Image (cartoon, rainbow over all chains, first blue to last red; front, side):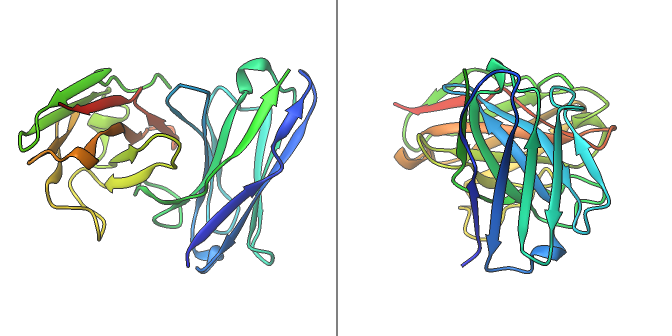
Length: 122
Length: 110
């Protein structure tokens, strides 16, 4: 079945880096844009970034621009989120999620979500 | 990239209709037909309920409907059921090619 599985979360000290991964299965990964969305404990959803199907287009929320980098390896059906200069306010559950389309432009909706991986910045 | 504005909570009795509003600006909600809505039950991942303002994915009950007027989008749940109790988030594409979520609305079925 269509599935996204995040990994790489954990406890990290403020100022350090962490790399999250998202493994896709059950669909043609290279056809779809993929988003990262996070949710702090007890809080709402916060959109972070999106990468287009081919990886040539990336867009970021102001809150993470310059610190986080999204990339993908279509040969391995895997998405990455490199997080640098981590802060306490980055403590969240991080979801990867599939765009309904290629994510070159337009906001067509996010139709598949992983279960998330937890990042705690101490 | 300010969050879209949603009411913190909305409640209704079973069978009633409720509407959740989502207010943005001409740079997001008002600028495109790219508003989507997500349902999230506690401890679960969000689920897409409405995309491109009015469209329902397959499997979403037709008691869920979406609309938009100007800078405000709305999600209506008709014939409210107990399983509809959840948090709901709107989301819009923006003029900077980014996305923005609303703060979320807790729906309580009385």
